[in-house]
Length: 170
Image (tube, rainbow, N blue to C red; front, side, top):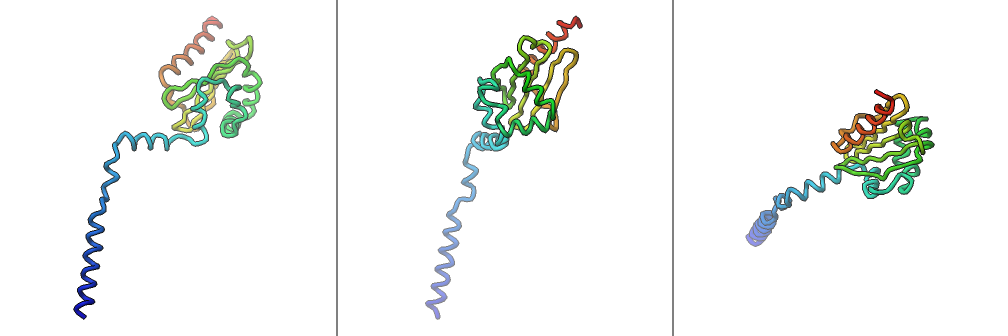
């Protein structure tokens, strides 16, 4: 009987020692910047994320209209106006990126001043906004909310709108 009590006591203390040697705070030794990067990447929309690798390519080159995730969202957002945008998306600019926001433009050949579309995509918020700068008005489509555009994109959009206004004599 003394031997079995000694055996239980010995096993019990060994188990306690093994648990005590485990460092439960080891995860806290990871530098903050590494966890921040992982969190930031995890917050990106998995369907839109591949577009980030297409920076510098036009909608035609990246086959944007065939991208199921983008075309599905644009169809929900714009309805029948999507077909009109695609019809007049003849002259195009390459995809640009600033922060988590992507931008690309397309317009009607030989009529960009009166028929231009600008698409903004927020990778972190999963928002898509489309702006149409038409002959007489500017129209916007927004998914759930307006994308907080970075300053260079605001300036470029404002320049497109103001050149239109100058052309119309406003």
